[in-house]
Length: 68
Image (cartoon, rainbow, N blue to C red; front, top):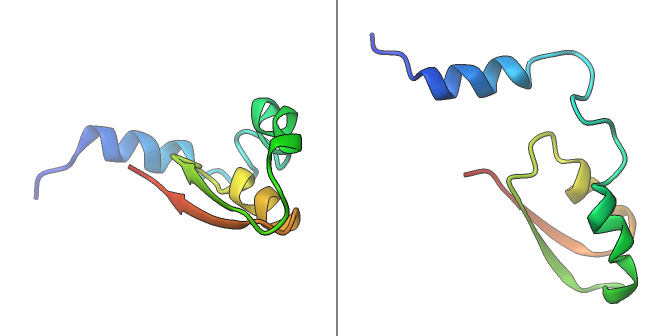
């Protein structure tokens, strides 16, 4: 069976029991919150553990999370 070193690296990184980057949204995203109207859709690309998508939903936005 062939292993993918890049996949293994990401799986190891995010397998920790705690959040790697915490649970608060990315500082840039939070600083731009005034630009988003409630109910708008937002795409959270490469959101890792999902902290930005969760925050967007808590602010009543529709969010789509994509990992590449």
